[in-house]
Amino acid sequence: MNPHRWELGGVPALPAGSPRLGAVPLGDQRCSFVVWAPSASEVAVVVEGGKTVALFPAAHGYFAGVAEHCPPGSRYRYLLDGTALADPASRSQPDGVAGPSEVVEPWAFEFGTSDFVAAPLAESVLYELHVGTFTAGGTFDSAIDELDSLVELGVTAVEAMPIAQFSGTRNWGYDGVFPFAAQHSYGGPAAFSRFVDACHRRGLAVVLDVVYNHIGPEGAVLSAFGPYFTDRYATPWGEAVNVDGPTSDPVRRYFIENALSWFRDFGLDGLRLDAIHGIVDPTATPFLAELADATAELAQVLGRPLWLIAESADNNPKVVTARSAGGLGMDAQWNDDFHHALHAVLTGERLGYYGDFGEVDQLARAISQGFCYQGEYSAYRRRRHGAPSVGVEPGRFVIFSLNHDHAGNRPRGERLASLVDAARLRLAAVLVLCSPGVPLLFMGEEYGETSPFPYFVDHADPVLLDRVRRGRAEEMVSYGWDEEPLDATAPSTFDAAVLTRDASDPERAALTSLYRRLLALRRRHPALTRSTRHASTAKTNGGVLTIERHAPAEHLVALCNMTAASVEVSLANERALHRLIDSTDPALGGSGERPVETLSADASAKATICLAGFGFVVYSTKQED
Image (cartoon, one colour):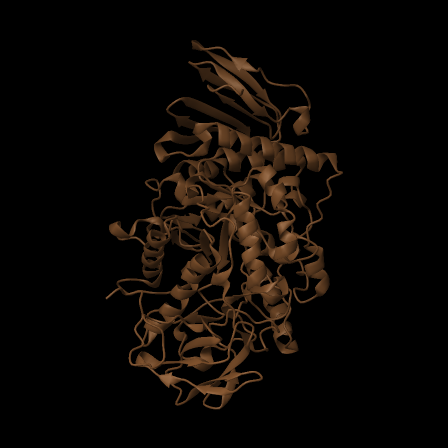
């Protein structure tokens, strides 16, 4: 039997095969309902304005049945031994977490780009955004208005922070309590389908951040239905999910079906799995491996690639090792070491996890080998950390100079653009976009957005809000900050995070030009598009970091001055090298004192190039048209 098809067994009046969780319209105003409630004696569906329909017990603690006169748009709740609750697999909560669930069929949306196939992940450029603050409107529909600018910029995929239904209207998304439902204040499932379709029409893939390590604190119903959580482990964010203990098979089924529904019903191209180190699973076939297998199977059925991108704090190469080789089978993972090394060098900060970083050699190691910590002692963790990653191809690592976490882990939520000058901001862009790996940009970085991105929430319970405030203050102390954090519960904290997009600032315009030029170079130059580990190297000489990228028909060299002082760099050039881009270009905010445009081939001599503080120049054997 296929392990991803779940048998209910002996349930009358159900369609052939294995029904999906939640409410599934069958046509003719009939709707199938399936819910796992192993401790319940009686389960029924109460349809608003209609009748109560008893569900029949099935195998393994499931209840299922069919309601007549229950078309899409109907509101309903489950009656669990007399207690009315929203559907744990609700696909729409139009009145928020406290309201009834709504019958919808997102799979019926007529996508205008049903044949869209994303480019290979290793050749992609991701753009992370938070729907609520990406535009002043804060909805999926208002976000569509900005997609053309992302295409012009040169990104190839949009990565949305979590949209699973959460309490209130202001939240990072990691407090979602209905994992199948698209947030109602963003526009709900219909608007999300429009957003995905609009991205695909423009050639943009769509990745969604999903959270399978915990559930949010307000409005959650899962615990009322079954043992979805365990006290054998703990997470900093809430109860740990039960993926390895007694009755964990239906829990796994719930989250795997959730992942597949985003791919199947909304046409998504990838999922970013939040903090997988918070999913403890010592079983022989871990939940994440089972998820990878199910995703690979669905990709075969759909005939298109489906990505799984993990966030992990463990520096474990097994995360992206193939299932056939005993790994978890993720397609890529975020590389925080690259970010920490880059940030510490450019800012000089050493608080919290930045205390393990600060040497340019560490950044070179992250570029050449993946992780900085591959089993070495970490002073921040006070133990050895990581495992060797030199055998992992660069396309398995997502790299960045900023993401939501590393702004939000600061008391005031400052972005890199508020911490360094224009020269270092430009250098950060070059280091990300000229390094091997899958680059990720955080919304607004392409023009130097300075609006903060602190953590924010919108709960109804005042006791919970006070707990959030105290928790944030304690978290900042644990990172070494002595500054009072912004109030995560205040509307003003959320309002300040909305992007400004002031195009009149010439410095912002110059930075945007740099990003566009760099992304264009990635498209046109095979050495930058994709790389194997042996074809990418980084080395340091004093404060200068040199990145070399190779392709069959191209050799590319990026020289980066990681210090504030001017330096002279000697460059051996056995083949003619042509300047592609440099920090002194006036169009990019530079001084105009350009380095030599073409270095003639001379195996017996070395060219000398002067780099200003935090300056850069990129040369290639392939000349620009």
